[in-house]
Image 1 (cartoon, rainbow, N blue to C red):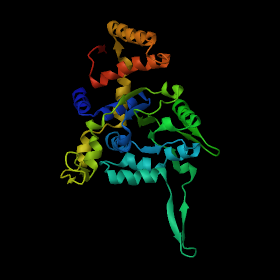
Image 2: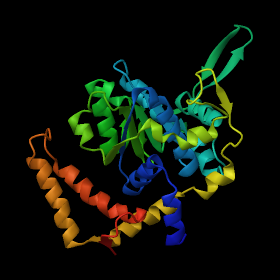
Image 3: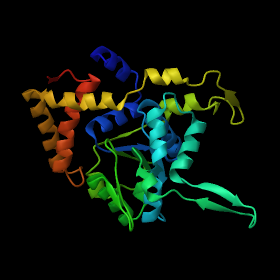
Image 4: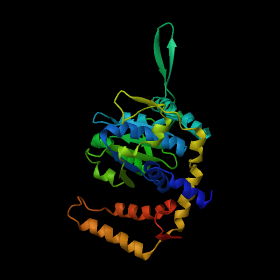
Length: 312
């Protein structure tokens, strides 16, 4: 793929799609904040982006103060066949198909009825048939107990989950995307320090993939009872034109090795960090890890062609 083609594809990405791309290229994790009533739509949008644009298998886990370690582990595991299906798939995922695949991922069990007993029994997959999803979307992790947040931190650091009977290793390119209410409590400071980047998504900016994949949408400009049927639904070939393969992302990562930052830009970045560290309005200051992430983000910014200040 030529640089011109890549630049054109990147220019067409939404803020959420671009944020995930940077997280994948950096092999790091991502935090998105929005309004509380838009969190579910944001979660569905990220799942569609993950499967349609980046050909990866997502897992969605909703956290609360009642979430226990088993809930978190069961939520991020998917069946191996779901991952193989994603690799072989060449079409876009609809919201209906997404819900079905998500149900299969989070609850990977098949039911069979016993005629004699007249009830249902779950046939759970064997542990060796389960893997950690490529992208784990954690909703409201900031509301979970301290132990759950530390468990998520250990997953970020070690990229593995230990259970009483098995050890699950995260796949290459593993990413955790945390979504939460912008007005909600903050994450544990140690967990927050391992977030590569974060931003606020304004609900007014819309959810492109979700709206394109939904057969029915509500027209906010009309009355609450007015429903508008979309005449155009996202086509598989449209998604294919915007898709980034894992090979593309690996190529982006390799390119950043040769990127150097000019002395003027390096000095400017250091001035920003120094100002934030000394400012009394910045609670907790700026950690060394955050400074490293800041410098790294500038290098990865080369693939977006946003700043012509980095040279190769």
